[in-house]
Length: 148
Length: 184
Image (cartoon, rainbow over all chains, first blue to last red; front, side, top):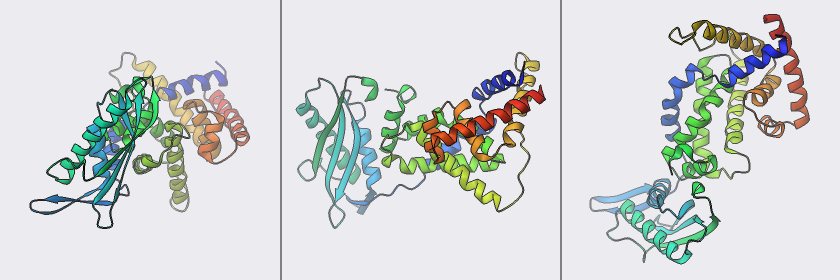
């Protein structure tokens, strides 16, 4: 073999190589990364024992989890705005929908699920559909369920 | 859908919405390549660990702003390459570089220990030859030949032009062929 052939062989070996250092590090990487701070606003909830505050990222995560498994749509972005005293004012859910899905019933389901998740997260007695505006925006449609 | 088979864009979107399982799938899919790249750009395993940890923490923090203008893979390599350059600058002001000590050991339980030993020798020779290269050509060669990125993606990651990348690859390949010829 000449130098080029040896280099090609070594390159192929390196492509298939996983460093032992990575195997030991992998779990730590995930745990450390998700502890990293994401900028977030405080959102005021209520609790029988006193005030309850959650961050907007927690609220977004709870609403996203509630929308998992819709089957015919998936969340693209979820944003919330708060009033001057940090009460939730408006939740916006942007989604991608499966092609052919009737959009008005879909929006109704998304609003109900999102409102339930907000109520559970902020300690509200009833889903705040009437109290909090949940806007649903269908940003895209797809015929590939893998992209949901 | 399970995260394991989901496209990168879907995982990035979910992780941006605070889905830990999706982020774990991203780490599992791209972590080995990012570590492989960082390990060959940095002097020590400890620096490599710091670099990859910091890169994924930065990715987690920035995913809500990731707009998909580049692929997730290119974006992750951009973050990692930036961390590599920061560590190299810090180390350049400090101690002398350490000799490369490959992390892998020959596993005598494998079916063909002789072949494993040869493979380890081959990789060791490549590592030694790579370390003689300046950071730019070394990075370009690793990203192109090992990780399969395009000239344009490498230019974006390195903050340079595709023609510069082409020159760096030519230089790197000439050096590596010569060294591997000598090793043979």
